[in-house]
Amino acid sequence: MKIEVFREMCELNEAFERIIEGLRRLEKFPFLCRELVHQGTRAEAVVLQVGANEFFFDKFERVVGDDARWAYNLTTVVSDVTVAPASENEP
Image (cartoon, rainbow, N blue to C red; front, top):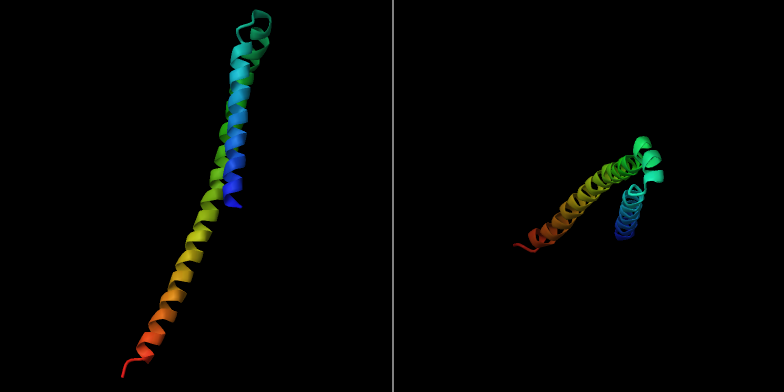
């Protein structure tokens, strides 16, 4: 599931890049330039992209932390289980 989330974020970033590049190309046209540049449309798209990435990585950090705790707990349980039978077999 997590790899699918990364793919979706990658696609979202690619879409933002296409929008930003398209807006940049449109700025070449004088009759559009005034509206696009003065309203900061391209800058707004970049801000939205950055915001989406910050939100994602904030959530990602929490998920990774949860996974790390889960892995640590699993390692502790597994080492307890593997140590216990070995000590029982000793004379």
